[in-house]
Image (cartoon, rainbow, N blue to C red; front, side):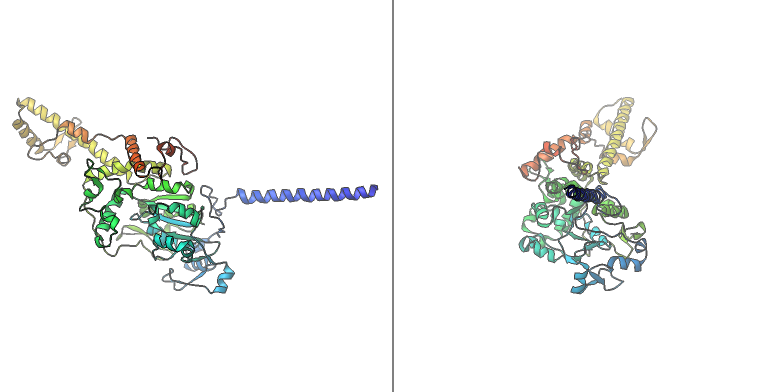
Length: 501
């Protein structure tokens, strides 16, 4: 009886030992695979990884030598290069080889969603040469095709990829239209989809879009006709409402980037949205492509030596593994000249949105400096006007005259020479011309000048603009202002001060 108990005890202890060892091994493996970054060997943890991707590190030689690059790009790819002269031309491998390599067509894991006129084409043209990226062809797909034919048809338009590659597509219209695009992407493609949004100077973008649509009057859709008037100014200002900015005009509405990104943030966390300044993309190309690699979780490939500046197009081209430059329009479309005061009014309108967008995604947008520069120039102009008025008053006192004719003579005399302020600094005549002090002696009243330089309240502007948007989208894509303050920032944290101005 004792021997039976001994045998049972030993078996019991052995089972317990196996269970304990198995539990320890399971915990250890779980810790190993969950604590390490899933993106790649670079240890990036700020952005979530793309599910079911197993990226391979890229050999350093593949970043400088064409032969090594071809092995990295096509060695395990679903395609073969047709020619070394044009690496975008390739052929699909035979079905047996596709099956052996695990090649299949998948809906894109990353989407370039816009913005038109901001240089998003550059990302598509350059990223296609990354060994771990496959890009759909340049043949455009209209959003209506996806609506009518469905996402199964859309998947059939995608390139073949392996689990070590990312499928990338560009749908620039999706940034703003249709309104349910974010919902369709989340539930039709994947909640894990990475989104890339290129934004740029909203005023320049609006002018460029006006020029493009004006040049294509016969091709414009009927609902676009009413937005494009005889001049740019008439298009973007509402003559029926005291010449306020026509915020519902598509030229203006399309440039309110933060409003449109709010609809995407209803369905995707900020960590899955990468916002890039188009000017940074154009002039700091290497830096931005390194950041894109980080955002997509790709292994590092791009080097500073891969990019060279082209003086003809004033932009950086890709020089390795192939010479590729941004697409240049075949027909140059001249843009209308827009007065500085018109630009300033538009920059002031966009400023609250752009400031909030920049703070939210930790971006310092280059065009915001223009408004500050305009304000500085106005400040200098105020000093010039004050100096002129003081000099005229002094001359009147000396001359003993205060009639309009005498004042006109004095102004003409002062305009005929350079003046010095109280600090001895030269005030050039060119500065005076900005205030329309013409040779006729006409002048603006000080109250008019002060009112033209009055700084608008940024918080009032933001609230006013948000109210206008809420009027257009009641209960729609735009949350209440109080709720905006509780949105998570790009790091996933709630910052109540983020939208406070």
